[in-house]
Image (cartoon, rainbow, N blue to C red; front, side, top):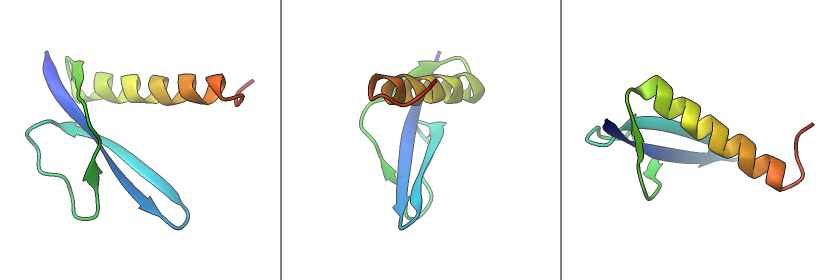
Length: 64
């Protein structure tokens, strides 16, 4: 298992979330969100992030 962090950048038109290895330096303009995802690879970590976002949106009344 590897650990991945979520980094975030906000702009006037929205937000950009990325998954990066925990030891990776994040790009300029991004801030690290607290916590980490444990996953086999970056694709799996990205899928976990997508599912977390979808679940949060559904709980807030968004979705089908």
